[in-house]
Length: 434
Image (cartoon, rainbow, N blue to C red; front, side, top):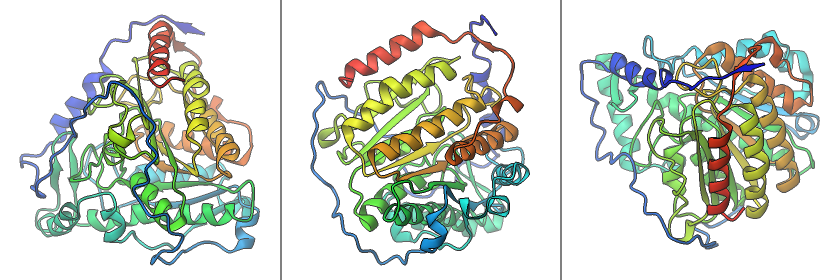
């Protein structure tokens, strides 16, 4: 059942309040010439340039750390863990409790290798990403500047490196961020390896932090240090020859950093659904890419109160036709769980069941379009229970098992603003000729 609500913006003011509360008495530490948000030019007409920006070599200097063929043969889920326990600020929503909460729930719900044998594989041995891996997306001056800033972090214990959300750094942040990115690359390696011998390879999930989709090429932003999914997209092209990458970002906030990296790239399609008017203020519906990349960025800002029904419609009417037309070699997912109705930083109405459906549908889409190659990367999600239950239900979707969302989902929801949602969907379909 449901009841009507105008969806007052009380949730919308929580993030600025948190920002004010969490911002320390120090100004953000200067990492160098961090320009922040890009300014987008909006083309009048969409084109479909197909120039490749990279050389699709199948060789790489990075040694691949993948399970054996026997381990991969029967697996349905492959995941890695990078908890970044040293990267933490007291009372900050992006805390070191997030990944352990997920891992604990996976254990409690018998979704780990201990209970599932070869169906579920945890990658325990992987290398951190190299500075070269990071520099495929971020300016080298920023990467080296962050490494240098660890000296100040060691002296002070904690520094603020971006005041807009805010984003903090501790003495371990640089190394933790390399490990997080490396954990994503390791999962990608394993999924690609499995796809060479199976038409239904396992879905990958990088349970990592710090998150990445707000980090811009020349600096950190919005709790994010390095763009984990963007780094993986470039790595997929460079190391595996997977030229065409389709990125789905269902975090409640716009993935401005990922968009910045690929805004002029015709070989990487970035599709984001997010709350209109939310942090960081980017992701307008007319931001569609630039130059050769015109038409390979799709933004669908949705009104407060958006929930399960809207997302099902968006998947069928927007995501599927976009992916079918783009013909990707791999699908990568910025999996943010802060659109959940219980999350404190937004006012969407996703349920745990919404994330189960998304996971199942994306897995099927990857099977139909790109040999099943699909990797999820953890982004937001700040209510520990809804975050961990939603990830666990995603695992169930990957395993082909029924959802347990009813154990946490509320018995009633507010009416979704269906007319506004329909207007947004119709508009984006018209812009992108869907």
